[in-house]
Each structure stands twice: as C-alpha cells, then as structure tokens.
Length: 598
Image (cartoon, rainbow, N blue to C red; front, side, top):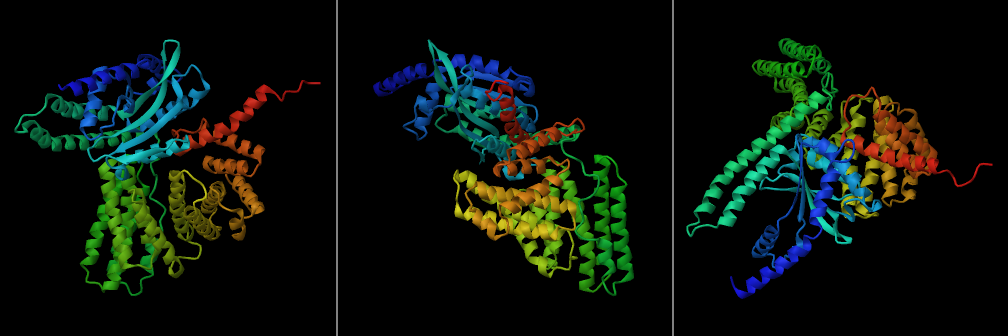
C-alpha cells in the first residue's frame, strides 16, 4: 500500500466512524417502529431485517466506487449506512405495506420522538426488469401510490435482472445529548427476489474480493454462468407473478368475469345481413357463435369458465377452417371469418386478462394479432380498432393503444354502427383518458403548473369527453362514467393553472360545472369513485359542507360490511383523500370554536 493510499484509508476510517455515530440507535428504533401499530409493518410483512453497515464495508464501498470512475465518492455519499429490508411473501403485499410506511414517515416531522427525520424521503426507485410486461402492473401501481402521498417515485428498468423497491429516507439517531440525521436505505422485495439477490450478489462479490488470475478465468466463469442466473431470475419472476395471481383469485381481489366482455357487435345479425351468403357457411358460423355464447353462459366458477372459453376458441378455429374450405367469394369469406375471428379474439382477451405473467400476455398478444388483421381487412370498422386499442392497453403499450383509439374515433363518422351504439361514446372517452393521462404525467414529472402543451392536451380530452357524453345520453351507465371523467378533467385543468375563460368558451362556466357535479352526485349511488370526484369538485368550488358529505360517503362505501374485495390502489388513494377531508373537520369539532356556552 502506498503512503498516499494509506493516508486516504486512514481518513476514510475516521470519516466512517463519524458517519456511523447514532446509526445503531437508528437500527434499534427502526426495529421498534416496524413492530408498532395494529397491524404493524412486521405483521404485514413476511420478514423484516435491519442492519448497520460494518465500518470496513463502508471503506471498501467508497474505494470500489472511486476505482470504478467516481473519484469524488466519499463516506457522505453513501445512503445505506443503515439498511431496512422489508421482505414480503407476495409482490402485491407491497401495496399494503407502503401506505403504512409512508404515513409513519409523513408523521415524523410532527413527532419529536419519531425515528424518521424532518428531512424525510430523498428518493424512491422502483427497479423492474420489464415494467410494461408486468401482469399486475406493480411498478405502475407503486408509482401511483407514491404520487398519492406526494412522493416522486420513479420506475427504473434494470437489464441486469434486479427487482426491488428502494426508498432512501433520513432517520434520527441519538448520539450523546442530541440526534444526528442518518441515511437509511429501505428495500421492499419478495422472499423469492431476496433469495435471488443474495445468490447474485454473493457470487459477484466473491469474485471482486478474491480477485482474478492473470488468465481471467474467474471472470470468464462468471460471464458463462450469468446466463444461468438470468434464467433463474426469469423463473423466479414468473413464480412471483403466478403466486400473486393465485392469491388474488383466493382473496377475491380481482373479480372473475361471469360472462364475456360487452360485445361491440351482434355476430348473428352481421351474418344475417350478408346478402346471398352461402347457406352452408351461414349455418357453420351461426352454430359456432351460438355455441360459443351458450358454452360461456353455462360455465360456473373461474376454472370451468376459462376451460369453456378455451374450448369455444378451439371450436371457432375449426369453424373458420371449414369456411375457408368452402371456396366462397373472397368478400363473403372475409365477412364470415370476421364474425368468427372477432368472437375468438374477444374470448382470448378475457382469458388473457385472467391469467398471470407470460401466459396471460401471450394470450393477449394472440388477440391483438387477430384484431390487427381484422382492422387491416376492414379499416372503416370501429370495433376491431377499438378492441385492438383495448388489448394493447392491457399489454401496457400505451402509445400504440392511444394511436388505435384515435383511429377508432376517426372511423366513427363513416361507421355502420347504429346511432346509439355504445362505442360512439366509449371510443372517444378512452382516447380522452389516454390523452389526459399523458398530460397529467407530464405536469407531475415537471413539478410545475401552467405547461401550455399539457394544458392543451387536457382541453382536447375535455372536448372529446364532451362529445362522448352527448353520444352516451341514451345509456345511463355509460353517461355516468363519462360525466365523472369530464368533471375530473375540468377540475384538473383548473388545478394545473388553466384559465376558466377557456372552459367558459366550451360551455363549462362555474354554474354549469356545479350543475354537472350535482347531477353526478344524484347518480353516484354506491360508486365510491364518483363520490370521490364529487368531493374533490365541491372542495375546489368552495362548497366545504358538500365536499365533506361526499368524502364521508366514500369512506362509508369503502368500509361497507357487504364489501368483500380488498381495496385496489386507486381505492386506497380515494380513502386517504377522503380521510384527509374528514379529519380536519372532526378535529375542529373536538376542539370547539373557542367560545364558552352562554
């Protein structure tokens, strides 16, 4: 060791000793924090581990970082002096644990005895190998949950197969007569991910610490076996997602469909409208689509329902093969195949949504190929474009889905759909949602209001949803859903710095907005999401009493004894917002108004 490197190491030793002062107190208090509350985080987790980084490992990490191209890296750069690992049995358990953790961290500045420092969260990174292909969209749901708490979580793709949720938070550690701020790295991961991480880290760390021979044999062995580690991780990811799906079905978190998705067209009617169609072809197709519906309606229970759909999909393939063998005129053959293939794609769409992981995605991809073929054959028909957009949306390809929603809307004026067909509302409504979603994400990531491009996009979403609402007036369910979206976009436009005059020009002055909110409340019934919109709307419009009543309705519905499904991420956000609206009022009631009774 050179004199200079010895001096550097000596300085690092002193810096490390100073940095770790108070760390052990943080460890003890974090253990207590994890076991406090009902339920505690330890109750919700499979295992909780807390450790203080050993001093020699701190020095090794700093030296390794400097050697790796970060000469300025120092002990103060480390964010894992204390590590808290929350291990879950299922991936989706993170959605139960994170709200509890975030609430504890948020309460830190108001509680002088809390382990969490007023400095709070520094960063949240959701590491994922394939966020868009995630069957349960866990990265997206965690990101939305972070935003609901006002934290800037971000998804980061990791080609090296690492998956975990990392949170850097500052904690208070007692040292002598005061407290010191200590950085803590919190990792939330499943037991399966934890095992793989330990194996991967152990093998790589072993090679780094033991060094390599002049022939580089150890490095070559590691590179050769990395492929095996990658296969192992792929299997683990599939197992984790499959485990989640089993749990969802056991818990009833995901409602199993009792019937196929709402049909865009009546297949038998379309067959009957084909002039001079060969009677044999008509009978084959008619029998296949009728049997398809009978088979699905007669199934009971998720397993038999899925089995029935698979069987029916096979029957539709065989019917299509028979039709191809009849030698029909090309236009007639295409029309009959359209009926059969659209029916089959709808079955695959439902099956794909019920399955977890790669098998579900593969089924959705199969459905998307059918819809894409039908859209190419019949570019003026809205149904295949709309269904293709829905399928791409489920696969996580948001840009492609938005493009197909736009194509479906563009095809509406020349479509053969009936005047009151539900697609005339659904297509622009979902296009508007995709546009609004992009705009709000842009505004949130920029952390600023008044972005002209994003606000213009919200206005476009408002215009489209206004058009969708006019088309939905004959369908109460579709109208209520569309009205809810429209009110929400109007509120967001105002909240993000848009001018009320722009809304006035579109016929949405304050009086009209209040009227829409009142109508939404009249028809909200037992829909917690609509009551959530009503509460936010009245809050923004200064109607505090009505906002409070709507917030209480949200809490009542989500806490209803008749409700059997656990809350989704969006419902957790709604509950949190409702409680925030209600609690200040209850606190004021408890304190009184400061005037003695006469």
